[in-house]
Image (cartoon, rainbow, N blue to C red; front, side, top):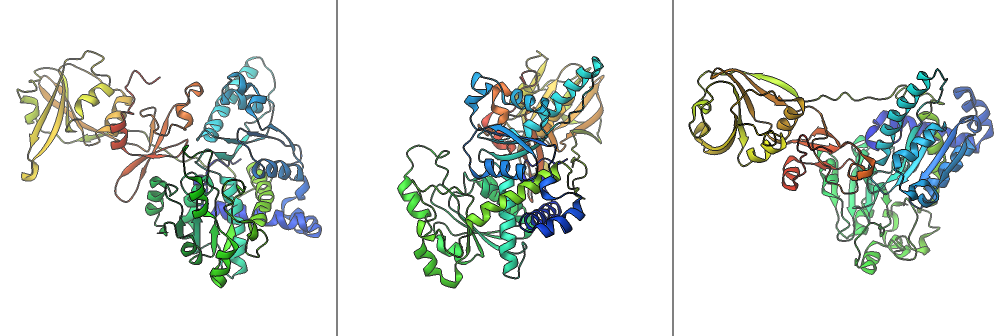
Length: 544
C-alpha cells in the first residue's frame, strides 16, 4: 500500500510507473475493446471493477471542484463507494474535535482510503501517523476481548495542504506535459518549463519544483513582485542542480523560452490584506494578444484551475478555446491519474516499486570516541575552576552559546555546580573565541541531551573526569532525524496546532555546503542559526 502525501516521497521510476498506469486507464475508459482485452488481461479486472468493495472518504476543509469531485468521479467509475464532507461545520470539527479524532473515526469505520484537503500544512503525514497509532490501540483492545478485527489503516491521499504540496495535481500535470511533449517527439526529460504568476503561495508550483530534478528540466520563472518563489524552494532547486532562469515580471520572455507555460492563480486567500490586486492582475494575465505576438514560439498553456475570473482573470476569456490552451484537457486527466493512484495505493494494481511501504532508514545521534591527553589545559584553568574529583568539561562551544546551551540541556534547572567561561584561543596562530561549560560533579548525559549538543554545538567535545583526570573524551554526532528538540518555524504547520499534540520531527539533510533541517510534516527547511535566533530550541524537561 502506498500513500500519496508528497512528491518528495516518489522516485522517478515510481512516477513513471504511475503515469504509464494512468495512460492504460485512459485508453481503457475510452476504448472498450482495449479495456476488455489488453487492460483486463494485464490486471485481471476491467477499469470499472478495479475498486470494487472499496470505501473511500473525501474529507475537504477547503473549497474544491476539480480535486474533490474528480476523486469522487474516479472512485465511482472504478467501482468504489464514496462518502465525505466539504464543510467542517457539518462535522464535529465544528464542535472543537481534533482532526486526528475525526479521521480515526473514518479509519475505524473501515474506509480504505482517505482523500483530504486542509489549510494546515503537514496534516496528511500527521494523519497517517495518527491513524496507524490508533489502529494498533484498537486492535489490541479487540484482541484483549477476543473479538475479531479485520480492518487495515486506510491509505492517505493529499488533495492539498496549505502552501505545501498538491501531489495528485502534480501527477496529472506530469501526465499532460508528457502527452504534449510526446506529440513533439520529446518526452519528460530535458524540457523547458515556464512557471508563472503565484510562485510563493501556489502549492502546485511547489510540487512541480520538487520533482524538476528527476527530469532535468530548465525552469523559467516569471511573477508579479512579492509573488516570487520562497527562498527555500530556490535553494532546493539549486541543491538538486536544476537550472533556473528568473525573468522577473517578463512573462512573455519566460513563455517563448519554454514548451510548456504553467500559469497559476494568485492565492488571494493566502496573501496579506491590502495587496494591490489590480496591479497583480494586470502583470499576471495571459491574453490572446500575447499569444498572437509570440506566434510560433507560443507555448502550450496549462493551469491547475480554477481561474479567478472575478479578480484576476489570469487567463483571459478570449484564450478559452485557443488550440494551445490545454487547461481543460489537463483537468480531465485528473480522472485517470486518480484512478491509477487509488488502484496502485490499494494494491489493486501491483507496482514493482510499491509492493511494500518504502521506509527510509534514519539514524539518531551517536557518540564518537576521541583521543585525549591527560594534560589538557582547560581542566586546570583557574578562571573556570579546577575539577579535583568527578566532573565533565564541555569544550569548543561556539562563543556566546554556552549559557543558552546549559539552559536547553536542563543543567541550570537541576542546580548543578556549573561554571561557564569564554576563552580566547589561538589555533594555528589565528585568534578565535570559544565557550566552556564545567560541571563540578559526577553527571550522566541522556540521549536527549547528547542530541541537543550535536544539534546546537556540533563541534563540542565532552571530557569525562574522575579523580581529577580525563578518562574518556567523546563528541555527539548528529544523526539524520531529530525528534522534539525544536519547534517548526512555520506557523501553519500541524506541529504548531496545540490541540493536535503533534511531536515535532525534523530530518537532517545535506546540501553542497552544509547540513540543514526539514520539518517532516510541512517540509519547511530550517537552519540552526535561524532556530537559535528565533529561540525555537526546546528546553529539556519542558518539551510539552
